[in-house]
Length: 232
Image 1 (spheres, one colour):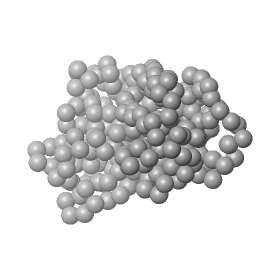
Image 2 (cartoon, rainbow, N blue to C red):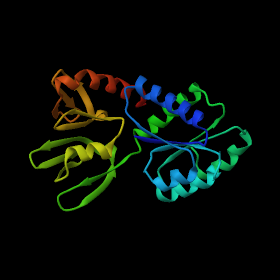
Image 3 (cartoon, rainbow, N blue to C red):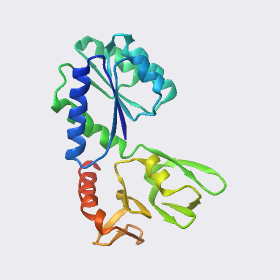
Image 4 (spheres, rainbow, N blue to C red):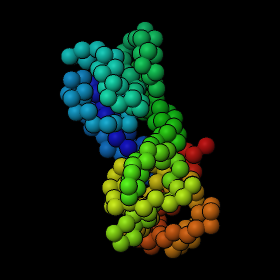
C-alpha cells in the first residue's frame, strides 16, 4: 500500500504521517508513506499511489486541480481532502472524493477514514498475472496463492493455475495488499481463502495446503487477526 501526504505545512504533514504510522502499527499492516510540500511535486512523481491526503489550498495552486491531474494518470487513487473551510466540501465531490477532513485534523478522523479505506482496499485491487505466453489483468481477490518452484512461479486462482517466469518477490511487491501474506519464501497466500491454520501448514477452502515458515508464524497470525477485523 502506498500513501501520499500533500500539504504545504510541514507540521500537518508530520502529524498525519504519525497518525498513519500508528494506525498501521496497531493493525499489523505495512505501508509506504511519502510527503509532498507542493502540488506540482506530487503530480510530477506519478508514483501510482493508492491514497492521497490532499490539502485543498496549496501555495502553488488548488488541490482540486492537482488531484484532477493525478486522476488522469491514476484513475483508481482514493482522495482525502483536508481544509480549514467546510464550504469547500461540495466542490471536491466532482472528483468522487473518498473523505473530507476539516482542520485541525484529529486522530479519530484519520483512523475512521483509514478503517473505511482498508475495507475497500482489500476487495478492489488488480494484479497482472504474467502467464508464459500472455499477461492477464484480473482481480487480486481471485488469486488464492502464489507458489515459487524452481524456474517457474505458479499463480493459483479460483479458476485454475497460471505458470509464470516472473519471480515471487516481484509478485509480492506488485500485489502489496493487506489481505495477502508471504508465509514462506515459496508462498504468498490470500487470507480470504484460509480454512484452517496449523503450526506448519495452512489449509485453504479448496482443501489445498501451503507451507508456513515457523519464523513467520507469530507475525502471520497477527496479520490474519487484523484481516478478520476488516474483512466484513
